[in-house]
Image 1 (cartoon, chains in turn brown, cyan):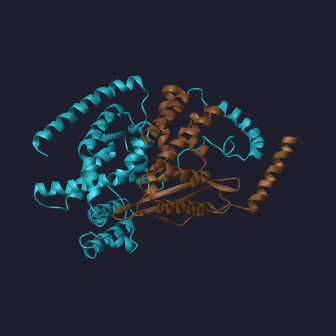
Image 2: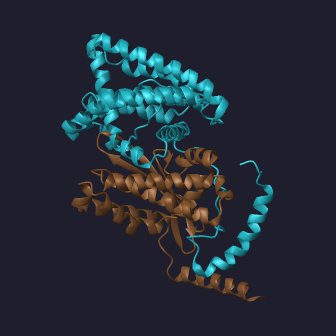
Image 3: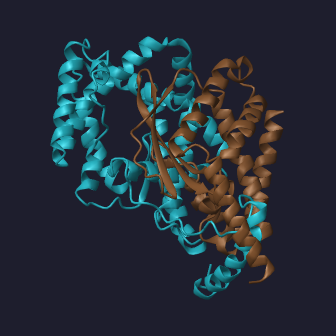
Length: 206
Length: 279
């Protein structure tokens, strides 16, 4: 057994033990914790409610981002071109896509008013690697909106890799336009157009 | 709106449709079409036309409505139209063989039309009778009719060929419960349109902020949502084999990167041999 294999085995054992010792919350509890934390923070924050996007972004970065697997999300959005991307391109894509999603949905948070979130019965087993947490956003006078979270086990934690609102995946909804961009100008072209979109938004907001 | 405006709108629509048809023919030759959207050239033209109408008329009206209608009134308006639609929803549930859902929809209508004072209050939801959303397009889908190409309708917006064919029936049935003079019926339809548009105002910002290409973003969102509706919230799972936990990267713990990269190296060689070269 060579050194690197030995180290891998040790790492696996250590990770296994540590996940026993401080196993994070399960997928349902994590989602509940996450949504409740964010919604109560928004409700308590006059600046976010007044439309302060930067403040909403800070909130999302601090509380939400650690529980999302953006690399997986980006792979899902890019689809089959992901396989052809180099590790550097994957990193760049992930970074730009994360910025795009965070800006877009932090902005949406500033419009949060009097909706409430309800969790549907969770059907998952403790040894699952992938989980679906189904919720419903209720609002007076309008039909409830279904919001589903897809989570996966990453080491000791659960991470969200897709959010589906009213049947629309916030992630795979990008697949067609990303593929179109890659067809036109390659993976680097997609990275550039994401950068341009993100830059345009920063300019518009400041 | 006077007839002069209507005529102008109509001729503009015709122009847009003709232009679209021309673009559609031209478009096929140059760019490989999206399999869901062979009519992209025409669709984009109508999409642009709808966008202009929206900016000029519908969105300003929806904003005013949003600003000046107190929440309880707005909820009442939404519930009122929702109650009328529950009848057709129930019929469609029965046609899809979902008897219990259909009966529950009819029970909703009875309860909300009486206790809920002509549907203004949605008592049935409070009582635990869930609101459903069905239409003829979904019923055809449940019967196995394919959705056909994506098809943008003037004013009504995104649709598919199947849903566009079914839509007139939905409109006639749902609108048929209101009887009055032409002007009265038109103003009821107008309120409904503005109410519906107002509910989408928040989505506008997401579209402005998030879309690389508005047309593609709206198309994909519409098609995904429609498939979700047809399968009652459980569409077939999409393909997700582009990423595996073995991909080296940001999420992997530093201590395991080494072990993982061994596996990925092997995975990449295998991947390269099976992935066709033509991307």
